[in-house]
Image 1: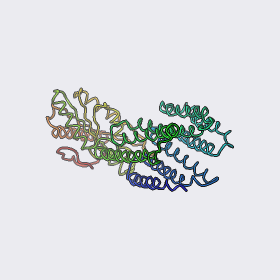
Image 2 (image 1 turned 60 degrees about the vertical axis):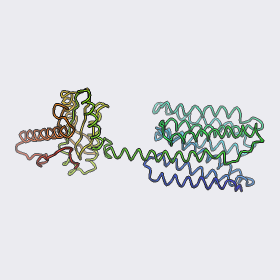
Image 3 (image 1 turned 180 degrees about the vertical axis):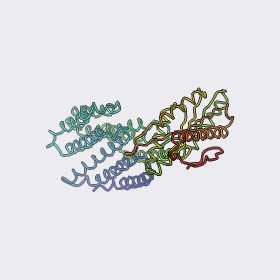
Length: 444
């Protein structure tokens, strides 16, 4: 057994444990794929302990060790693919895992299996290409073609150099591993286009990891007098591990910050972020001497939906209403959930009272439409209050009070019409008295 690999095995195993501890608290689904990738790296070092064994056991250890190294890289890449849940993407990943494992097994089996190298090389690039072409009508993405190109080029390279006398086999295996880890570098560069320490360290680590499979054979061939310890070639693995841990922590911090400023159910800004954006909108309007409109939207029959159909349907209704309002306003405007069944809309410049009334009318019409939620047809109306800065109020609190009062005036006006239209039947609206509000609505 090669006990010199034991320190590397222990170090990577500890890094994998650290990554598992961080991943357990992470809300990012890709971190689980990364953890599986690091467990295969542990398997890689564990298998290489047994490479010196004679006969089939040494060959099997070589195959498992090299295959585990390719599995890790493929999993790292697949975790960053934006369409990885698409069915054909899963088939492509399966073909890559099978193709690389098959090639390594054939290359390690000795000269008796040299005839199988060509089919195995063709399979590496041909299988993903065939799957892509077969699913072209149902799914097509430019990034998929960018990913496929290196594997097709690799297949051609293997066909040309793998039978070269002397070092052909080593060239082929190094090209195989370089292609995978340079692919990891490009995939992470595509996904993490941000100036953070985690992104920089991970991308630089993968680039160095890929460079090992070029620098090591060149050093061996042209600088045989230079003795480089194996630990030096393994350093990029530790750099990548540290970078990935930082990425998970950065994503978790960003996720927590998002939760602090957004409603967990609808994903819309919450009251805290709404206050901040409203203050900013009023300050911009004050400097440019323009108008800003505030709309308070309150659902009319939400309590009845919750009581009769359950909170699950009520949650679906709130999500549906949030998406309707968000789809009606401009990207420069803001819609927030500021209460249990209350939403607030900030219309920034260019806007006017007429624009706000037009938006209000269109929202009322949209919210009157019946909607199918969890096998139930739900119909709710809404009441809207409009206040315009600086006509109705000159500060944030007064503007919110003005919009809130007008929303309740609209609600009671609508109830009066309902009672007049159906005098013989009880009102379906809640019969509670209007709430006195001084500022932002209290969450229910």
